Length: 269
Ligand SMILES: [Fe+2]
Ligand SMILES: [Fe+2]
Image (tube, rainbow, N blue to C red):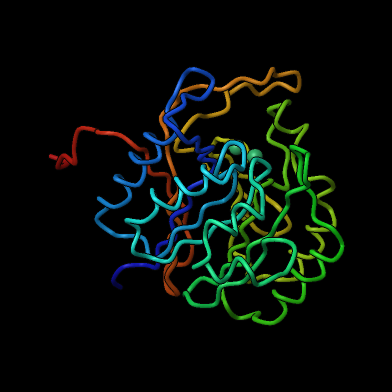
């Protein structure tokens, strides 16, 4: 039945300006360029692109200006949410054309009703901390927002995942107390998925009657070390992003797109 609505999710760019190499290992701007080139060469162009936080490495104005320049070739709607490496004021200042960033006066949270999938974006950032939180007021807003369109299939976007990954050093800086969020999500069966970032790996978990997942990064990945004592390390695993596809007849499914030059497609014969 034709093509689905496709939402690309790109997370944790940790963009640095001025050609600086992160940790002396990689060039985040070059890797984001490669990611966007890959996305723009997809056979099915995404209908929208959501960036789920840690857009920049240090929240500096020049990092957001560079991000705006790099995102300029994207012709589809682009939605940004902050991560713990971002700064709200600097982010808003660099993207004045992104009116949705002003839907809420303090936090960068918003709802987008323009697509077959409704996007509900939360702000989990706690200034000065690596871990995230959703206050009571944010949870009330989420509950009321979801209650206002119970028949519209919805994805919730948030930087910090509400589940434990078994990677100890990341779990130490996850979402503080996911239980009240679970109580809200359980009440709204139209939530197809909760799309997160922060962990720099593709991970999924059952959560409150839906699926919560983290996206891989188009830059560096957190080392695959399923140990509660895992030290904080990263790996240059294949960079990637997600493609979430939805149609009313086939439903919702999430794919991973690896960034690079690969052999194929080859026919099965
Ligand atoms: Fe990150
Ligand atoms: Fe993060």
